[in-house]
Image 1 (cartoon, one colour):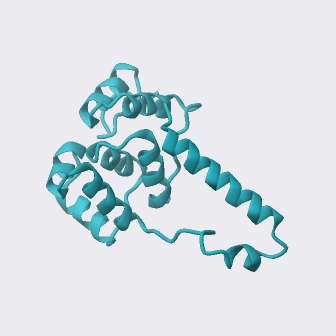
Image 2 (cartoon, rainbow, N blue to C red; image 1 turned 30 degrees about the vertical axis):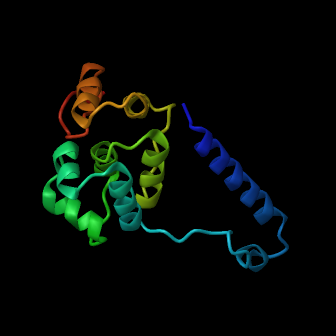
Length: 153
């Protein structure tokens, strides 16, 4: 269930979209100080670490991703693929809104409830499951796990 904060944030995004569409030129919209946010994935990951009271080593353990890969993503040296981004979200204990934002900033597609595997992952994120528990659900329901094992449909 989306939080009240998430709903007001979405409303603000909708208001910004309305302002953009009503603008005579892109520059007219872009000149507003609140029009765009320029935040990269590493900044967001560090913000999540602080908010959730975690260290990168905690994320490595909880995500199941190789430590070097995690450190490279956090430093901005590399971008995670979609499954690694999802695994990072689990490792960081993200809620659904945070997970979707992490996926957007990683440059990969968000979880979409019309896709069977994504629907399972959404349910797991929303219900506070760990990455291991998500893999168990994916495997149980015949979908490829995040660690790349399990049946392929």
